[in-house]
Image 1 (cartoon, rainbow, N blue to C red):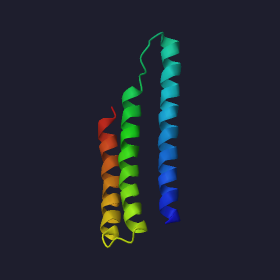
Image 2: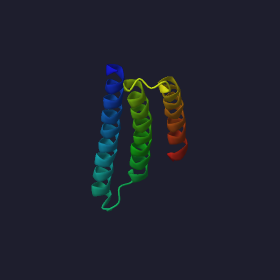
Image 3: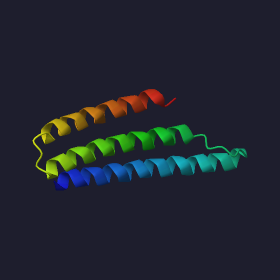
Image 4: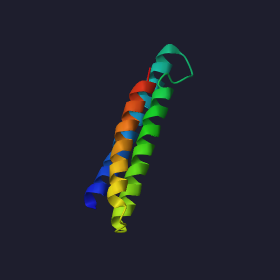
Length: 95
């Protein structure tokens, strides 16, 4: 149970760190080039979207496990598959 909570916390923290770093670099780049748009906005959206899907799948698996549901192992298996698919999808969307 604590491993699932730690996994979710780590996932959200790393996703936020990546998004903030991309936002900061986009802001710095925009100030140097005198533009108002963040060049990394699409990458930020992909990182946050992927992190949210992954966190949601893990939360569902964790809730099923905590409630002693007989389908928790299926939920864990599905969460693992979602994790792999989300990251593959992220790589294909970032240009």
